[in-house]
Amino acid sequence: MDPRVDTMHTMSIAQLVHPGRPNYACGGVGIYMQGRPIDQFVSNAHRIGIQEEAIKRIFTTSSFNLGRLTKYGEDWYSLFNTLGQCHHLYIHRFHSIDTSVEFYSAITGLETSPAQLLKQGEQIWNLHRLLNTRLGFSRKDDEPPQAWVEPLKIGFVELSLMDYYRAKTISRDDVQEMLDEYYDERGWDKKSGVPTSETLSRLGLDGLSV
Image (tube, rainbow, N blue to C red; front, side, top):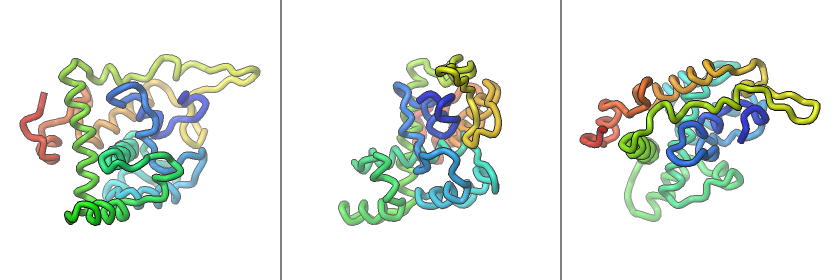
């Protein structure tokens, strides 16, 4: 997805930080049409289990923090993969973290909680990152392509990289700041993009540091 056409949103950041080939789907948070109001984002954040303290970091009355919100879209996506559920937008937007907990407990007979399930999704994303780090990948591989910050001409129309609400043009420095915020929300080192020892310990992944 070219964000100059589709604006800069969570699925744009997801393409940069995905552990394999660029994949926008993992950044989906249930809001796919452009220009949706903030209250719809907040409502959806509750649906997928984002905790209240994170919601306060991510949202204002008129905007949202792109890098921080992307992290939770990815965790939600990982959870769907773990449970073998389809993440297609016409399906997953009708599920919630609460229904996922009910399905999990009904099928396995094991009691769990929203926080525990989402932690599994977060563990997966950190394991992806550790594997790539051991293969030599780092923050340099999350850099936006130069084409994103160059005008795109389609016929008589010229498109630039803009924020979700098309209120301002996004520069390369802006994207770097979004990556900083994404790493911070994930608990990864901002310079290298590697999960910190504190993050790995919190996720029960001690001993797996690079």
